[in-house]
Length: 147
Image (cartoon, rainbow, N blue to C red):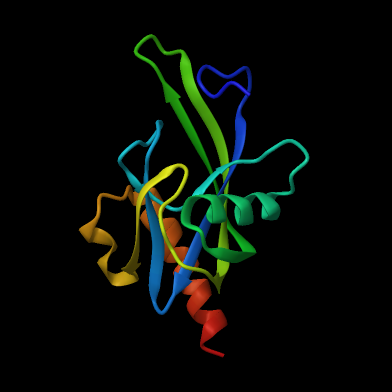
């Protein structure tokens, strides 16, 4: 599967995980987004259901077990080069995930990870779109956990 200059958009998933009022963030190890804080996630494999992909990607990047619950947002990442050719084109389905357990440590595509208080999202360089998606997920997570 060719990631750069693909023939068609690639499907990815992201996992938004909260635990004790903190959100799980990783620092991307590889392009695109190398060195940027984000949520764990990656590409869906052929024959893999979206929820299976989220579980696998979160485990591969953080060593944590999660249960994908609800789709929060579907986003596009279309990144052209200087000539206007599309270098990357991803369609990403972001899920709110229940934290099940595990010992967190960065792995595979993550160079670092942090559990960050939702109220401190502005202390890391996170794009506004992702902040809004995390906020949307946080609102739903609080509703589910305040019962």
